[in-house]
Amino acid sequence: MKEIGLYVHIPFCRSKCLYCDFNSYECREDDAPNYVESLLGEIGEYQKRYDFTYKTVYIGGGTPTVIKSFLIGSILEKLAPSIKAGAEITMESNPGTVTFESLKYYKSLGINRLSIGLQAWQDDLLRGLGRIHKSEDFLYAYDSARKSGFDNINADLMFAIPNQTLKMWEETLLKVADLGADHISCYGLILEEGTGIYELNKEGKVCLPDEESDREMYRMAIDILNSYCYRQYEISNFAKCGRECKHNLIYWSNEEYLGVGAGSHSRLGDKRFWNYRNIDRYIGMIEKGKLPIEGQEELSGDEEMWETIFLALRLNEGLELRGFENKYKVDFQSRYEDALKKLTAQGLVVIEEDRLKLTEKGKDLSNSVFIEFL
Ligand code: SF4
Picture 1: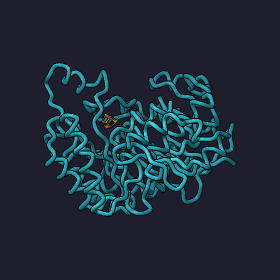
Picture 2: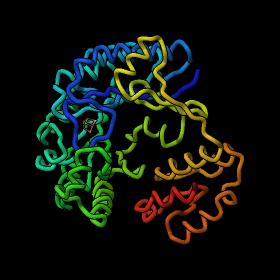
Picture 3: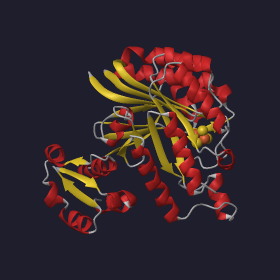
């Protein structure tokens, strides 16, 4: 029996945020029963074909909490025989889409980790991002989740967003840290082509913080969250002791996982494959009795090594060199001699106790570090 992680994609949202390029559809919640039926078909197909046990389950989206809660119940009921006892089961949620009753129900299903998308504390900034909620909705969701028994809550925050000042970002961090969330994710806004914000920026209608402010905000997050005893364990993620996200650690450790639902990606053995993104296409494939896989690729040895390096470098503990050498049968220092010399001289990486790690400067310039190992 193989133990892997499972990702379940729910591609529905109440409305599309202006920066979002995730596979999510607004105002199509009426399609959710049909979609979930297909999802159950896909899960069942994998249960027939493989002997997997899921050591983590992550229900993401989209916004899983916009569909009728009993549909989430039917997914977990189907998965139940394949979930390892004590597994971390996370569900993403957004303020404005949960109630105390729905949260109590989710908890009763065995969901033991809740991720709440706040992004920013200031309602003006939230409106500018096209978010449907205000900070008071976040407070209600957070408080209701605690009262429903969730003792493992993540808050998603975003910096370098239009019109955000350092003071505003500081307020967001302090408010969430004061509440005592168990885990905090801090991602900088990325302008993705085709999104509303990308177009507004092109037309000069939004003002984004410059590169220097972006880095200042990032360092501010590290300083403030450290002072509240959060440990930065990944470039963008901070956790109280023992509250690191086990599911995401599977990705960063380049371990195996299965993704079900429209557009989800999987990595099994040396194969990667991905499902159709379009939900009608996805449902159509399941109705024909087929797995909804759109494409697959086999990674070469070099590609897999690179992936393992850059994913591990995202983690504060870095890459364990002996383990890497045993797995890929290479001598790390000689294989990557040029990159190591250059990056060490620039003060971007360091080797400590058999682990290759990014320095603080390296975290700021992580993308250029990753490229050197290509
Ligand atoms: S709630 Fe999340 S998934 Fe939905 S539109 Fe906004 S950013 Fe995208």
